[in-house]
Length: 252
Image (cartoon, rainbow, N blue to C red; front, side, top):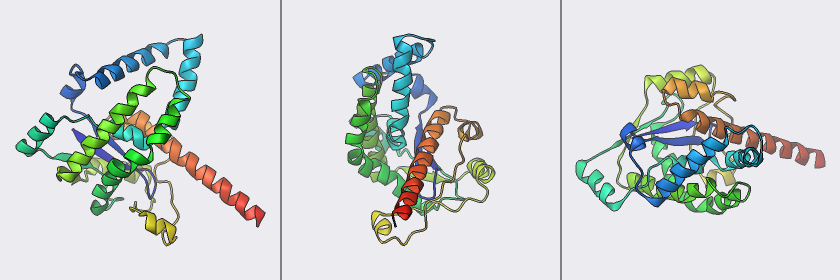
C-alpha cells in the first residue's frame, strides 16, 4: 500500500492510504468489512433512483457524509490490521511509501502530520463523528465508525515501528507546481504556536474544483472524492472564519 500526504492549506493536509489491488479485490473477512461493502453497494444502488424516499435519503445522507471531517475519511482509508498481519509486517521488514510534494512540504513534517492524525484525532473527533451520523440514514454511515478507528490503530502501529518511507516524486511535485505555483510552504503548527499567535495566517493551497486533476495527475481515481470533500471543508472553514472576523471588527 501507499500513503499520500496532500497539503490542502499551509497548516492542513489530507492523508489517504491507497490499498494494493489484490487487497482491494479480496473478499472481506471481518464483520466491519462485510458491513461496509454491503452498505456501499446499497448506497450506490439507491443513488440510481430519480425520485422517491430512497432519493431523499441519498440527498440528505450525502450532505451529512460531506460534513464528516476529512481527517476521519483519511483514517477510514487505512486497512485494519490484525496481530498476525502486523507480526508478519515486522518479520518481513516491510516499509510503506509516503508520497508527498517536497516542493511544498518539509520531509521532517511528514511523520508529524501522520502522528497527529493517528493519535490526536482518534479521540478528538470521536464525538463529532458520532454526531454526524444523526443526519444520515441508518445504513451506510455506521459502518464507517469501526473502520476509521481500526485504521487509526493501524497507522499508529506503522508509525511506532518506523515503517514509513517519505518519498517526494516528480509526479506530485509537478502536480502542485501546476495547481498552486505561487503557494507558500506547508508548515506543521503545534497548539502552543497557535496560542501565542506567532505563526502566519493560514492560506488555502489547493484551488476549488481541483479534485479531478489531482486524481488523474497521481493516477489514483479514488482520490477525486476525498480531495473534493477535503477542499470544500477547508474553504468552508475559511469562509466562516473570515465572516466571524468581519463581525468582530464591526462590533468594535
